[in-house]
Image 1 (cartoon, helix red, strand yellow):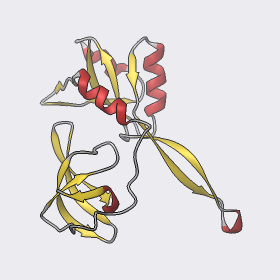
Image 2 (cartoon, helix red, strand yellow):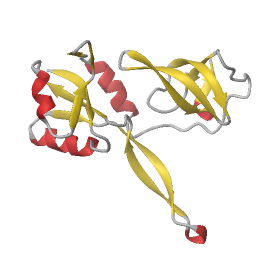
Image 3 (spheres, helix red, strand yellow):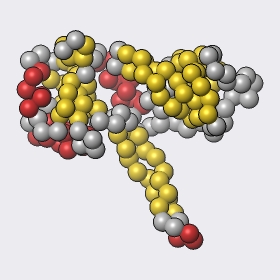
Image 4 (cartoon, one colour):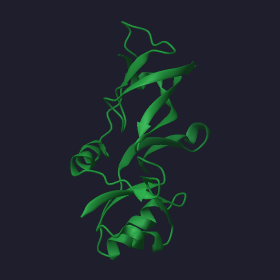
Length: 166
């Protein structure tokens, strides 16, 4: 059997995961833990919340005739190229599993070398840690970058604290 990345309706990752598990599939929903502030004024506090690492995506191990996955409620697509789903190798899934739920946090940017537009930087935290990206722009404490995602290049924003000059 092969791993595929499937796209879900907005905020339906957990529902699709549960439906596929009931049908007997091996499903993996990578998650990350964040601290969320709640309340107002002096009653302000924080709590730990678990979010999907890839919004609207999860991974499923399915046999080669994958079209039956499209019949599952809230599934909107299978990630692929030219109408053919892109299989994902086991070692890539293991790499994502190792990052899931255990996201390191960096407190500050490397002070030894500044980040500049047009230069390369390495992502130091999050699901793409270790990936070298090109900086397209800098805005306050964030950088616009181009990241390789599911075989294509996508633009994204990332905190400067999570980048280090390459």
